[in-house]
Image (cartoon, one colour):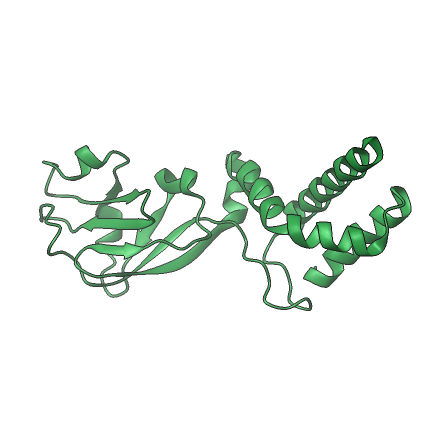
Length: 188
């Protein structure tokens, strides 16, 4: 489904079912899309059966063991993320997510490698057989696989990067939000 088709489907429903003017419905749909996608993705990520539908690979460019996380990552899914390093297939399986910063900075079992995510939107990384040192560490790209909020398409004619199962949830959520908007306007 393209962004244009999604917008048309929700706006057409709002115009016919709620008697909302098309212009009002279009504006509300455009405004609510980012939060609607976030809400639907968070709900899907909370269920192991649908969390897999949101998994995407993204590259993190590490410099001295730190690198920025992708803005669309669902941070609640960090514990289930996997990592891969091109050309070093044995490193990824040795990496372990550590949720607590104080645990991450050690001491930890040096046979394994560790990574963590902090609220500053940065991934911190310690290679196997190394200890934490904020001034040095791995430099290079790693690939992470984790559930993400699907990105909003760049143009109206681009497809939404969301499985059909979740698209129907998105449409239903947006219709519910339009119904709430229409009811609050009617009550005002």
